[in-house]
Length: 394
Ligand SMILES: Cc1cc2nc3c(=O)[nH]c(=O)nc-3n(C[C@H](O)[C@H](O)[C@H](O)COP(=O)(O)OP(=O)(O)OC[C@H]3O[C@@H](n4cnc5c(N)ncnc54)[C@H](O)[C@@H]3O)c2cc1C
Image 1 (cartoon, protein in one colour):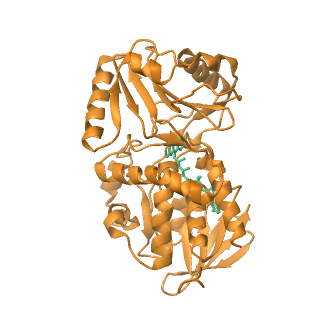
Image 2: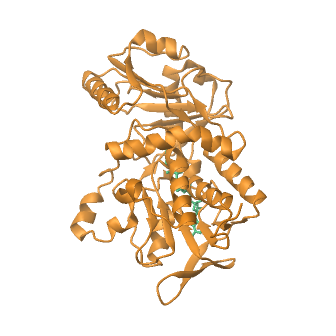
Image 3: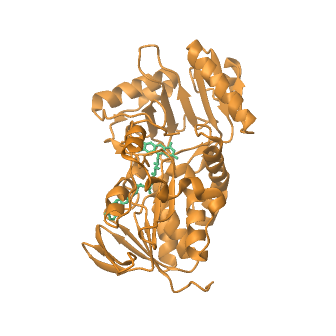
């Protein structure tokens, strides 16, 4: 179906889950889309992601609601993609053995319930019944969020690209964007790559951690926090978790942090420690072995697997931790799409970006807190305050 904007040439920079989702949505609306990635699509942060779809770990309520809206969109988004993307529901369990941590868990559940979120406290017995494969050990408080799930980012990216190819979009891999050709008003005329120039009416910048550098080439300030994370993988195993795909297990009382684990569609497990914003840079084999042995204490079937270390993944992380979405004042046809939790948020972010770009409207009622210009007015002091590694990431 064509519409009044069908001649618009849209160049999307970055083929991670965010860029690929936006590019596909725009192509599906009849625009001429070119998707450019300097490597293989999906190989950036998206390949390191734990890929847990949730809104329970998100504050304040406006940001929680954005994540929740996206979570609820995932089944339709996946259906529209028309192939299996590894979407699996069944919820997330977590439990605590330390009384202070248990109180925090209980308070969090109460807050989520006051927001109408389907999180609830469960007894140790119910926890064991929910996921019989787990060796739970002592429990002071436990929680189950029944609506959460997981997906495989690479399968999502591949599906977006296949659908785009059917729509005759141009997909360029191994082509690095190196500059912008700009007109007198600051707008981008063409995106310059090491494989040639691409004329554009609209440019979507979804280059993950590289967004800051590329935006600066167009006089736009998009600061990020450095946010390294490590999630290891294992060799494949038969299905171990039968009911609940995402597990957060407490520290083993040795001063190390809690661990999280899930089983991927190919049978491999992903295991990380801390929460979704914890900073981690140990990507050695011995650390991977340690994570696996800790996880195996909760899920004995894991003892059959070998740990495969994964290099540090850098989370795209706007300085205040919240999504950055929309056109920029300095470069009117440059649209920024940078976010943490991009796996959870891909359906809603891609829907809103495609709406704004294809219909020439502004979804301000939802996106005002997340506009790129919020960074333009920051003083140096405010930047320094925000720049604490974990400041405001929720
Ligand atoms: C360890 C870890 C755990 C995470 N866990 C979760 C989770 O459980 N749930 C969740 O929702 N989110 C999670 N996230 C966050 C989520 O994975 C990211 O928000 C999401 O993957 C970001 O996708 P993206 O497309 O913006 O970036 P990326 O996947 O990094 O894609 C950006 C792309 O841009 C390309 N690019 C960069 N520069 C250029 C250039 N100059 N020219 C051309 N192409 C360029 C890159 O090659 C890359 O493919 C996690 C992230 C990490 C690292």
